Amino acid sequence: MIIPENPNTLRDKIEKSFIQGRFDDVTTSLTDEVLATQKDAELYVWRGNIWYNKKKYDKAIADYNKALEINPKYEIALYNRGLGLVAKKEYDKAIVNFTDVIKLHSECAYVFYNDRGMAWKAKKEYDKAIADYTKAIKINPDFANAYYNRGLAKKEKNVDLKEIKHDFEKYLELTIDENDIWAKYAKYYLEDLDEKINDPELWSISQLVNAIRSTLLIEEECITHYSGLSVLKSLILDNCKFKISEGNFMNDTSEGKELFDFLKYKPNRLRKDGTYAETFTPKTFIGSFVTKDMHNDLNLWRFYGKEDGVPAKGCAITMHMQDFLEDIKDLLSNEVKEARQDDESDINFYRVAYLSHGTTNFYIPNSNKSGELTILMAKLKEKIRFYKVKNKTSL
Image (cartoon, rainbow, N blue to C red; front, side, top):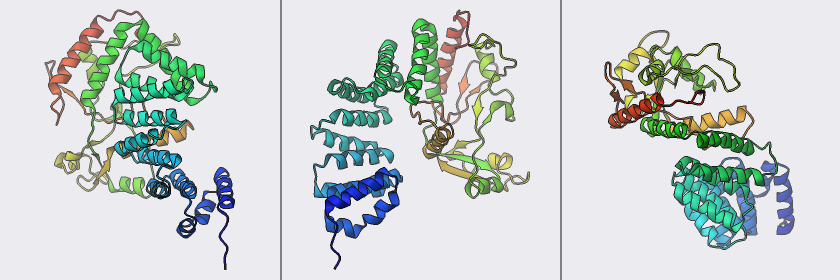
């Protein structure tokens, strides 16, 4: 007869293995049979945490659910389940979950408000996110993360610049490690904010640029890439990376240049350090991707779906756009050994806009925003025309 381990002894063993990073030891010890015998909510949470660390979120959530069946008011299980739902991008469910754990009136409520705020922010419901961060700060005025996150939400919402500045300054005031990656970002944001506060016209131009980007932003589920079968093999079997190219290297050399010609603006070569750039070519980053509706286009098969230069002998690779973007961000953060910055909006897919020859009218294929873009571009041109700051590097 095998005598079951005392639950407390088993917990100590599991906790020690978890802290030492011996995750497989935990899952080996906490089999379904053992957990069914012990009927201990905490042990389910420990195994759920292992699955979470291994990014097996469905399994993690299943274990947190089991823990909650044993103890419906188990705070850690509720909170961790919310984190699992956020990781799966099931933000609505995560918000309900965080709301449930907030109702327990825990001493850690400020943490739960902060995480619910992050779920609201992920849904771009910035007012609700800011409200939750504010509640977290009211409970714990020294909670640095809530100031940082509130600053980001205000930044995304384009609220008063001085309000945003206050939040990042407060974060730095409360942050112990000044070399922390988030502290570096906060300092960067503060420099940018100071520049815009001191130059209201630049701020106005920046807001116009953001509005223009919004009209061009692609928010579809999938995108398609035409290429050769050998490229498909490299990407899938050989685990190679996509190459992100620039407009200068595409077949249309006017890309990028047309923007400056329309604005009647020649970029300043002066760098922030006072030196001059040796060369400057107006550039736009570009990737050879099209929206899902173009996944079987005769012209694209002819020009890009090639293998060994033979048209229509290649392939069209269709992928989930958001997953692809997440992979790019993860890859970049791992390569520089720094934390991901989810709030930066410069890694996205945008539609190409065309300027009708001899006119000031812009055209965006497969979009109803051409008229809106034309109006915004005219405003930008006018703003730049009257922008008289001597050093235009930031422009």
